[in-house]
Length: 390
Ligand code: SAH
Image 1 (tube, protein in one colour):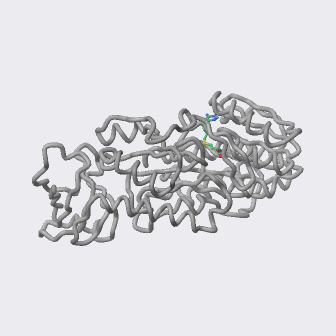
Image 2 (cartoon, helix red, strand yellow):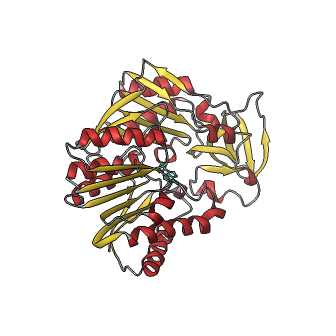
Image 3 (cartoon, protein in one colour):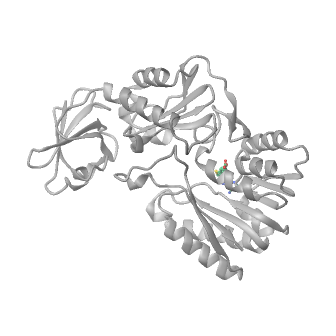
């Protein structure tokens, strides 16, 4: 086993059970094996006390991803056990509700840093986002197959993580013969999901609870869905009986699937689809809406981008508010970790002030129960939203 010895005074995070040992906290590495990529390592304080065990990655800023705190060395059976627990927790969770598309493993929150697994009906889709997980591909596939009894498994490449971790990006079948496109059913809503080319692992499972809100509020309303992807919110609005639907998305593939999904959801959708830049669209649009969803991609990839991201969030909300009818409902989301709930409120305040459209916060929104966050790992928070009433 590799020993990773921390610098004096740099043991606080590990003692607080934070799962990341950053490269700047490491004094030296002993007994690094010939191929240390992803190997088990023991993390020690400068004084030589064992703090925990995790997966070592010489290439990453996150030098060790801790899986265990304490003195007892683990082995790979721990991963199998944790996958079993994560899957069983979802199966027994009434908060997730009726759906055949669920996040089964949410990385650090499930004690499995670097691993994200979603199930889409018969297909389990995994992303191996750390060296530790990448070198255990076969073990993880076996454990997921066993825990889920799913007929097939597929791995989606994560090129950004692969570059960071110094491993080769890998995409392909894990077991069985997965269909590239799956039809899922989420609390009555049906969606086609492209598991091979779609964003994330194919679908934004994290917006499930907010889709419920849209579905319960959209009846009779003129709806604008900005950054629609494959029509997650539009389908909810169509099912609710929205008066009209305006769908805006820059990706042609995503918008094509949105058309299919909306068409299947309602007989007379009164839907118009725009393949365009939503930031520009909202400036030029002259429509009037009673329910607006603003769900942009992550606008701050790192802390240094926060001010620019806040301006972009404010801008799109400001112009959307000008298109809002009196009493309109506006869903405003941010999915960058760096744009936190407080900042999102400040952005909303500034936008309503500049637009001259005072608004109330009706609800704070976030990711559903299958996307838990570990209190030990606040970096796991990313999605937040506000439901505003103009
Ligand atoms: N609301 C969606 C998820 C949106 S993710 C759902 O619930 O499924 C953000 C989406 O914004 C992605 O589909 C991305 O392709 C799209 N996008 C990114 N930049 C854009 C832009 N400038 N204009 C319009 N769409 C954009």
